[in-house]
Length: 318
Image (cartoon, rainbow, N blue to C red; front, side, top):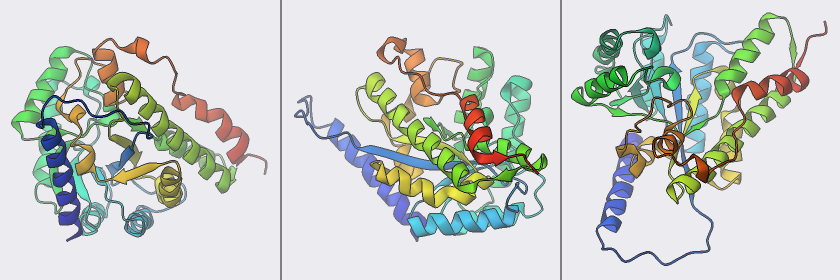
């Protein structure tokens, strides 16, 4: 029932937008109100193996409970070829909780490393498994956000996805949870002691500031606040701090919407004519339309997390 309600909310929002576009050419009255900031949370790489702090099963239980308590629906982009013994149980648990299951390829290859034909076969292998999974919808997200290194390869995969009935599960904002998770794994292996509150604060700061950055980029590039889609991962950082992130986003003025609502935004219908998708759909549109001059502010790179992580989060003294 919950999944049906979320789907109806998304459909209603899309129909309202369509109706508004058909009312004629009279411009809307100017408003001094702050733009409405809307964002969907989306989770890649399910199911990941055990992490530095939690097992895969523990992580799944926490994520499901936290999303339920916060009344948030997400989409899990799945790699069914990952060697997780509880793969089926985890994906079915996410679906049973009302979440969407999307396709993230069979085993997470980078399109740059494969031919278009081999990459499409990898997608098809995942599709054959996922079609029988409850909660599945034909939404595809490129691993590493990479559409390859040539226009020919990019266009071949795009055409294959359309032929298979897929839409693109693009992102607009990166939480950089994947970088913090990797730093935590490395530090744990090195025997470091963690300040878990500092790790939480660093993650929340990175994710919220990133969402705000891409909202500003959206208004500079599109002239409006697009519905944002945050890139997250099924890792320990999310499982540990998801409630904190949701509260922080809401305090910052963000309305958390479903993926269905987010992908009803007009930017979903435009495939940017660029090979650089690494910063998400809005940045790609900016590059494709040569609008870089509209926005000169720089987003901190993921490597900028390394120094504060080392200085604030870990202590290697034994």
